Image (cartoon, rainbow, N blue to C red):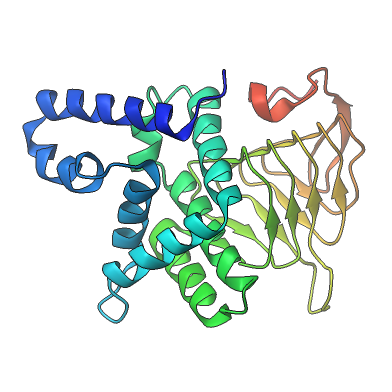
Length: 261
């Protein structure tokens, strides 16, 4: 997919929203509020996230300002958000448009909530970061520790039940499905979570545990339990997971092919 600017993506999202408003008048008030009244992509994103994560104790207008502050002070966040959105459009046939994942895909929303929480965490605003982590877990059923290090171009498909631990590393252009855990193996402290390199595809329900490396361009089969490092461009599957083949694709995450051989 050709790289588009934030302005170009925003123009397309607004065009698609206008079409939906014609087709489904019941959605006009909501689309007007969260899309059409905003002049910029990031303002609409702040509106969506803040309304989903707000509570009576911490209202949407306060969270809206936090999201805007993060995006404005760290341009890399907006770049990551746009790359994540493009990943959904490019890799998920259910996306169908820019508007659908932007409005409805909780995997996309959960990742952007993490990005705001991570920004807060790195600025020693850890209590608010933990609040957003907790609300993301409650709202999206996705629990990502704010200290985790996650790149861009990340697609979490369906997303329900995903857990990513504190010292996990996920590099760019990774795809993972629902039920994936990047966790530890016990009560040990320190660096204890997996390192997922660029282009990895992780199938639904896979559990990757411990401070192990999943090499670039590797593939983890659905339902696997991975306790040992995986070499680059290798397919593993099973409980415990064992090598079952090699990956012909440079980045399996982009093709989303789950064959094991």
